[in-house]
Image (cartoon, rainbow, N blue to C red; front, side, top):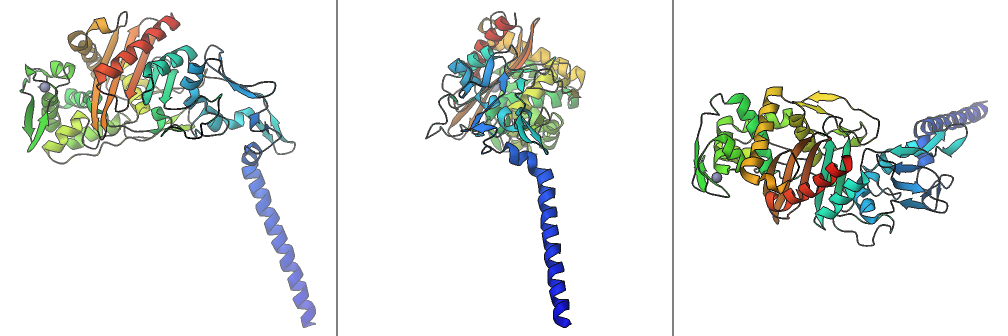
Length: 435
Ligand SMILES: [Zn+2]
C-alpha cells in the first residue's frame, strides 16, 4: 500500500512539473513571442538577414532603406546613406538606437495564432536627405555630429553622426572607433562656452544688477584661488559684450556670483542633465553638471568646463526653447508625429538670450559669415584631453526655415573656426531646400 502511495505521489509530482513548465512556456510565449518572431534569425521574415518587405523614407519620400527584389538596399546617394546611417540603422542591428532597431516591430507583424507575417510597413521620417548629405559632407571626415530641427514643429531634419560606414557595403572588418554610436543622442561632451548660455540665463534671473556691472579682462584673473585664463584681452566690458567675446573673465566672475549649486540647478531645469526619449522610444544620454564647491570651481563650471558634460540632443532642446519663446516643441523623427511642448524657461529670459545671441553675430562673429541667414548663435571651444571640441549652436529665424541647430566637431579646433562654417554650409542648404 505504501509503495502504491509513493508511485501515485511520483506521478502527481511529474504531472505538476509538466503543468508548471507548460505554464512558464505559455507565459513566455505570450510575453516574448513578438521578440522571438522578430529575432534576426527568423527566416520567414529575414532571408539571409534581409527584410522581405518594408521601407524607410525621408520627409520627401526619398528612400533611405528598402527591401528590393533580391536584397535590402539603402539610399542611392552615398552621402545620404552615410548621413542618415545612425538614424536609419542597418539590418545587422549594429546601432541600437536606430529606426530599424527600435521600431523593428512596425515592419514585422507578429500574430500569436498565425506566426510571423511582414507588414510591409513604410515609415516616413522627418529627416531631409539633402540636408543630411550636406551635413555629412561638411563634417569632411571629422568625428562629430550635426543636428538641425524645426523649432516650431519639433521635426528633426538632420541628425548626422560620424564616423560611421556605408551600409550598402556592409560593416567594415575594422570599423572606426565609435562608429556604432549615434553621437547626437548617445554621447556626452564637455560643452565649453556654449554652456555660457545657461550661466547667462541664471544671471538674468538671479543677479538684479547684471546689466549695470562691468568687468575688466586682462587675459586672466584669479577667482577663488584659481587662475582663470581667457582666450583674449578684452579690456573693460559689459556682460552682453562678454557673451559675444565669450570672455572667461566675465563669465568666471558671473559664475562665482551665482555659485556652483545654482548653475547646476539651471542645467537640470533646462533638461541638460536628464535622459530623454525621442518619440517616446529612442533613449538619449543624460548629461552631468555637478555643483562645484568654492568660487574657483564654480567659475569653471559656469564656463562649461569643470566636470560639465552635455548631450547634443539635450542641448538642441535647450536651444529650441530659446528660439521658441521658452517652450520647447519636443523633437520628433517620425513624420506626422507631434510630441507636445515643454516650458523650459521664462519667456522673458528666452527673449533676452535670443537678443544676445543675435548680438553675438552682429558684434563679434560677423553677419558676412552667414549670408542670408537671420542667425542667433554661440560658439564653444571646449578643452578636453587630446584637443578642443568645436561647438556652434543656435537658431535662424528666416521665414520659411525656423531652424535650431547644434554642430559639434570632436577635438577639431575652435568653435568659430571649425564648427561655425559647417553650420553655415548646412543652414544654407536647408534654407534653399525649404525654399
Ligand atoms: Zn576676456
